[in-house]
Structure formats: structure tokens, C-alpha cells
Image (tube, rainbow, N blue to C red):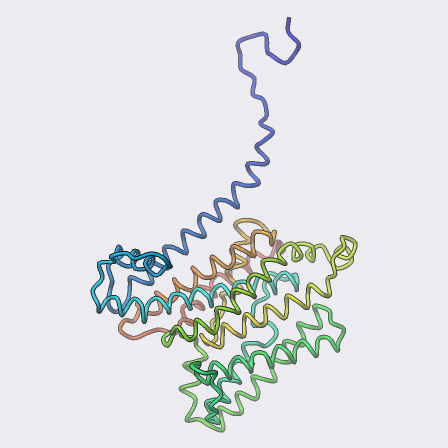
Length: 365
């Protein structure tokens, strides 16, 4: 007797797999995680092995593992190669990864807070403030370094925080809305850029030093810069990741966010402060590196969707891989000379930005 659950004939009947939607929900994020980690590993190994003096890839991989605690491996590298690896390549790779992750997390936070996929880390005038701070140090010969940290990064950090603070203060005076903060950022950037231009014109002999810094470079990267930036990247990145669900809530609008029990004002203020600190710390040790915070979160959004639960954590991994890879290009394309890394990211980011604008005819996601 047939109860209707088994076909009478031998012909197989396709039964819908109720688990398919669940599998599909996890398949893309899992693939994205694996791909992001793979890109980061490839970028790190390539950056450690390739340069003016090429190092054996196997030795580089073993030396990287040997740098971890409790491991004592025979890397096969001679003393000269070990010095290059430990004193030059490794701190530069770590710093590039920290800068890339910081700018990408900052860009993702700004894009979520302002509900604008074209927002970037320099939105509130942080770049202009950093430029003025660096220019002031060079022009006036200020010795304001923090211990082993050079005076230019210290001045850039102070200037970046000053510009972001001015923009935030003006935005709050104007009501604190997203539009008010955006306009305040424009005003702050314009003011700091004007002062910087005035100082440069009055001190033309300093233009080359300032210009070199403004283009972005990791050529002087060392462990002191890593120690300066690492706490900001770790703590700031953790805070942005912790607020990733709140960014999804902000996407539906402030009224809806309040109805869901969230405090949009507190979330916005927290993320703006954290993102500004991340950006200020990053540019203070690397100079102005454009497009990283704009391109990376947006590219991830195009691949895995618009949920910040996935976009934010992946931004840190892909941002680190992207800037490490860009640094490899900067070091090798004109070897033995070095191309400013900001030029490399602009070459990559500008065409991508054009594609974003072309795609925006149908509206942003």
C-alpha cells in the first residue's frame, strides 16, 4: 500500500533539497574567507621573497614560521639573507599589512556610517590635516618625535586628528547629521589644505621632502613604526568588527534603527572616532595612500553582498593583502629605484573608481 510518500513506479522523482538555501548562504562567505586568506599568504610570501635581492621562497616561508614563538627551524638562509629578511623585509611587510587593514576598516566604517559606498578614510579631512602636520614639522624644523618615532609621523598624526576633530565639531554644531558631517569634512579639508599650500609657497626649499611624504612610502619602514601603528590597528579594527552588525542596522535608517533598540547617534560617533584614529595612525607612518579604503570594501561588497557582517572582517584581510601586493610593485617596477606606493594604488584604484561610477547608473547597493 502506498501512502503517497514513495512513488509507485521506478522513476525517480526529484525532491527539493531544503538544505540548499542554507548551503548557499554559507558557500559564498566561506569561499570569500578562504580566498582572502590565500591572497594574504601569497602577498606576504611574494613581498618577503622579491626585491633588489631575491630570497629563496622556501627559506622565506621557513623564516616566517621561525619568527613565531616556540619554533626553532633551520631556514637555510645565510647570515646576509637573514639580515635582509629580519631587518628590512619583515617589518615592511607587517607595516604594509597594518596600514592596508587600517585604511580598509576605516573605509568600511565610513561607508556604513554615511550610507555611501563612495566614502573613504579621508572624508573628514584627515589627509589634509596629516599633510599640514607633516609640512609644519619640515618647515619649522620641529623636533616632536615620540621616542624612536620620527618627527614627521608625529606631526602628521597630530594634524590628522586636528582636522578630524574640527570636522566633527563643525558637524555637531550643524546638527550632527551625515550631510552636516560631510560638509564639515569638506570645509576642514579645504582649510588645512590652504594653510599647507601657504606654508609650502613661503618655504619652497622644503617642497621635495613634503612632496615625497605626501605620495606615500614604506621605504623607511622599521619595527618602531610597527610598534606605533599596531595598537591602533588591533584595537580600532576590533571595535569596527564588533560594530559590524550595527552598521547593518544603520543601513535601514535612523528611525528604523531606534525601533530595533539601537542608538544611531552613539554608533555613528563611536565609529567616526575609531575610523578617524585608524586613518590618522596609518597615514602618520606611511604618508597619504589613496583608494585603499574606497576600493577594498566596495570590491568585497560586489562579491559577497552588502552585509557588513561579512564586508567588515574581510576588509581587513583583503586590505592588508592589497597594500602588501602594491608595495611589491612599488619596489620592483622601477628597480633599483622605488615608486611611491600611493602612485601604485592610484593606478589600480582610479580605473576601479571609474567602473564604480559607470555601474552606479542603476543605483548603489
